[in-house]
Length: 263
Image (cartoon, rainbow, N blue to C red; front, side):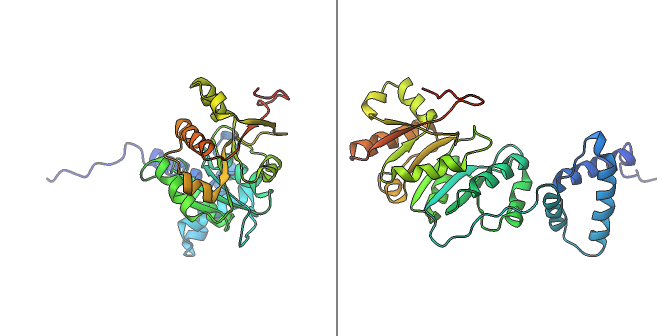
């Protein structure tokens, strides 16, 4: 007698695991108090699949139920291109996109490293959002690809620390046209390495938190050149820009949950 094919220890257990995976992809609440919602959602999803709907379309519908559509203005010539990384979960990423979209004439570029596969589905929620694949290569390579296709007159790079970047703080950057504007993280690095006095950055107080890493004219970004995404690489860019005569401004932002500033 030929040996039988191995069977799962528990078919019910396997089905439960598959349901959890599907619920996660569809953006459905899988906590205990959401059990009935999960059951209903699977029933609806099964009906849609039986009628020929594509699995990704069903998952996207789950995100739409949870978050709703996101209006990112589509402008032919944006004032600013904002480049930022996907957060650790799609809910946080959606919050960032929603907040930044309020700034108006902006182009939003999301670097998606694949930590949450649902981030790619944001194309269906926010068609004007530009998603750059950051899974292959390094962060530096991803940011250069994004900068090469950016349409904004200025580039804004954000760090990953602020979960709800302020649209007001983003719009206020327009007051510093022609300058290189750096955030608290880069200023900290300047002080740790002893080059803050050489940099000669003028301080301005931001009214709210943005999580700014760097703001610079797109043409100057390409001309001076930045070697990477790290604080050291950005600081090196700032020093070269300063040597070339570009003014440097420190964007001092309030501490989290406090009216106090970082300096």
